[in-house]
Length: 97
Image (cartoon, rainbow, N blue to C red; front, side):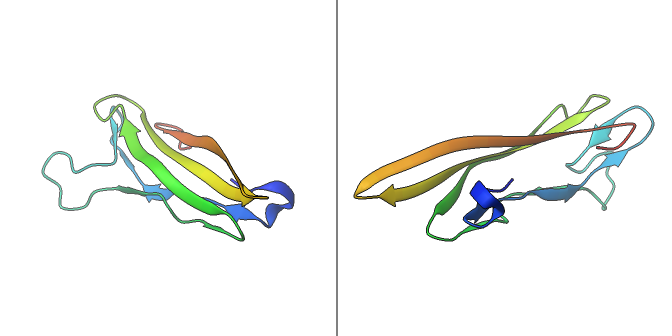
């Protein structure tokens, strides 16, 4: 997700998940050494502060898993703190993202 004109702030999340035909998962499952991951806080800000407030997953034992990245973008303008909170999410399952 990007800010105004794509230059002032930027945040992304990435990861790897598995699907076995019935279940999707990010955390280790079935005792496999290989497991997925979900990482947030891969952004930056030019004059802005980008802070992740939640980087999570939902639905680890279902046919889809939802990964989320909730973050706050903060700037001080003329001595006044201004911020907004955003959430990005992806549904991962049988057909990919």
